[in-house]
Length: 472
Ligand code: ADP
Ligand code: MG
Ligand code: ZN
Image: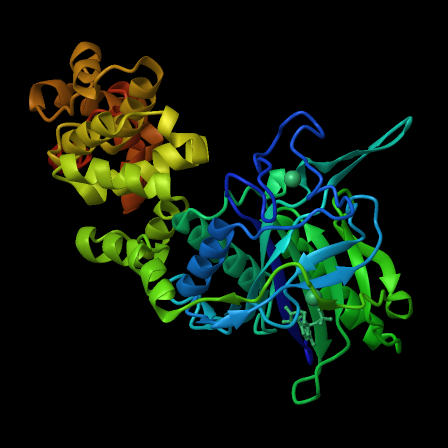
């Protein structure tokens, strides 16, 4: 990216787990409740209140660890990370600093246009903090989020640029969604990301790194990485040195700015959480979690490419969310043309309505459109049109095509006059054609397409056109 420099990037991703209750108490972990209605003495940090570990949260952490082929620790425990901030009423966060549940592992980027995987350092379980709400009258605190289980997924610094960082995060998100352990809604904060960036000249030791905190969209991650690389390289080129610091991303300017320098780093005075006994995960337990693992996105992608001949790019789009993948499988079961259905689905459904696709067209109607198209009863243009019409009215594409007369036109009696008309209408194109410009034929074909509302069979028209032009 910058001549003579290379970048090193590591990500720390926090994912809120979709458990019903919080990680150390029985309060609801649901998002969006009335402020301060989902808390109790335990998550409010009252003296004497005792935490009880949520088994489901442990299972979800282990599931994530297995998906990324981590080693699952036989024994692990929790630590207190001490700091005072009003969103954390205990004065410390319970986390796993010394003995995470999951160690090592990797996120595979092969099959996504990259020839590499990114190694993981660990996945640990911890509790979320409350939420500060800044108003004109002062700061308010909502403790509902306090104690919601989080896993933190820490990568090794194996990422080299902004695109890789985005691909990594997208794949991480896909896996967690397929696992069903997190909603991964970056806009609601259930998936958050810190990026660490350093630059160096090839062959030299790693440069000092900066950490950009709390990015809440994949695109911001890309922008923050790009900005940091440029800032650090320019700083070095102008004779400066990069200082280790924590920065924040300004969404309005697309720039990162200093939050705190290394000198003001907090000492968290970690020590073992005495109120939660060490957790032992037997081989049988890990096996039982493994047996319940659902299909993973890479397997789903392989299924799409190998079974249906779907292209890599399209397969990645269809496996963006498990519900999108399931919708496609339902469609594929009832169409004779799954590949056509896949392309229509991505091109005409997902690009139009994204993750809300399930409230758009039904699987039956998408399959029907793919069949009409596959059987060459409608053109590609009409297929697009039918999907839109069927989504709007809820009617069957066959019924719409019949009523609106949208079936492909392949008969000479209709097309020949239109072709003659198109030649009369464009004397300039005819001249060009006679001078040997083959592309002039597009003008005539375009005319016929417009005149038939995109229903004319393009190959057949060309055949007729060649005949007419030959007779000229
Ligand atoms: P800390 O203990 O200060 O949190 P870690 O060594 O645990 O630091 O690393 C935190 C994150 O920073 C990890 O995701 C890691 O991959 C990343 N990281 C480590 N060294 C570098 C570096 N030189 N450049 C970029 N990222 C780095
Ligand atoms: Mg860290
Ligand atoms: Zn509680």
